[in-house]
Image (tube, rainbow, N blue to C red):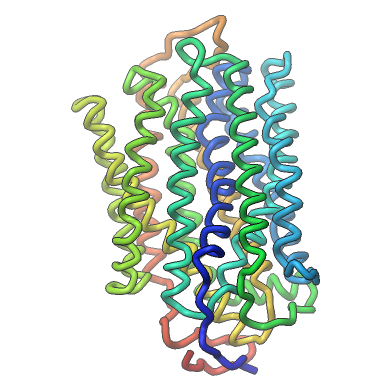
Length: 459
């Protein structure tokens, strides 16, 4: 039975701000380990590059289990605070502690250090899931309006841009604040600083969404876990959206892992990581209204294709950095930042559309299950970016080290850094364009549930 469609309530500015501030956590936790953890392990803890890449990717495999479970739990939670917000609070009290432990820098090196960091990162990933999955499920339940979801998520993307500045500018600046490449103490200070920022963001989102509207089906899906998995799998628009998003985030994670190496070995200045991210963040903040307008003019799918092409073009152009120099590299990242702004805004908006249509068609609340599967697979695929880059470094002959014993890298390793930062991500992003063309979810007609035979209904 198709649930009746009612006029969408307007989400107040206070709720939009309260919801958006949570992105300081989601964006920061996604970016800082992706940017600094691989480099921290290979250059401070003497972990081989291939093993460091595996450690970054390994805990994300756990997301395939924990994220759908957290989503299901949040769907079924009955609380006067709502089904999602108690989980936001649970993440807020656990993630900051686990994050600090990842960069604690115990007196271990090589394989023992890798095992310690791997365990801590696994705990941090679990704590992060408690916050992230319910948080990303909330927009689909705040409004039923197709374009208001994009407007709502525009606020979230503004905070993501600010969080990217914190991740890409403040975190590397603190980490490399002592000496040419930083010290273990500077990495510890960075971890504590970022943990405090994430705690403030999570608590701000918890209190800021206290008056968030709740729309859609009030009853959770009572089916078994595997039955819900089956329903998610049969939702064709969701499957294609997940595929293209995962592909795009794989490219992002590859570039994040490569950035400190690109700054240190291609530009010859490890501290350039900060300025590279500074020029990346500007377009993300300034172009957001443009992407909102383009999503209305071209529809969301057309705007997504355009964003991916801009993103891929900037990444590919950066391959000429050894010829044109550091200024040129920074200019190419202006294009990359504009493209990332578009694809990330549209990813979240299109996900909210799919979840809302599912609720309208089935009469069940399973936004948590959808976002649990989404975040698990997307982050799992994305985590392989560091692993792929680590393997590329190993093939190029990269030599692991620690500050007391610096080494000179061979030419093959320098070339591997450039390829991993530019050519490989560009190819991966272009693959997402073809996947975007397979996505179908008209704004005025929901998708047909082929399993139940439900006919489309005008929204």
